[in-house]
Length: 189
Ligand code: URA
Image 1: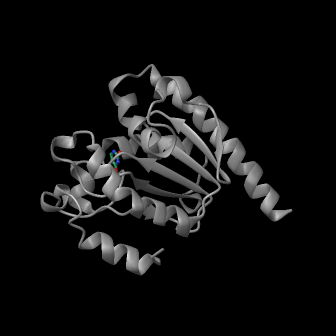
Image 2: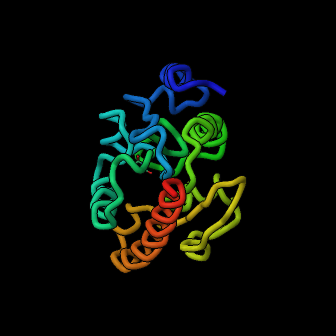
């Protein structure tokens, strides 16, 4: 496994797949590298590609609002994506692109050692939890794997398209907040 400096260096020059030739910037992640909570999205969009940071466009703004409402502070999470380069036109990453990029994400998980992983949407769920599961069926349920508590929920962009999902994601994230508080409390005791 690489340390952070090596990992960022490896990502910066990455040409493992064709997304390397169309990206403006690589989007590794942002947040506290020692956080108990890791969010995993799908891949950078237009704004993220421009700024080199994940979840800074409309979906990110919605996620920020949700996290503020839940009083989950910026020091409590790190946020990354399945793929580190923008797929053209914001299409879903191809299997081959995701598979080539996943070692970087695994390396990030190894370095951060989060207690909780939230999969934002079907793509993160597919590569982290189960490639055959359906997000509408498994969202909101805890999966314990290799010492991590994993919560699949909707991608915030899905809420922008369908407001009825807001309440469901809110319920899922309340569970995350509750477990986060429990785990952080236990650390202090
Ligand atoms: N959607 C994602 O999945 N990731 C981002 O970084 C931005 C939008």
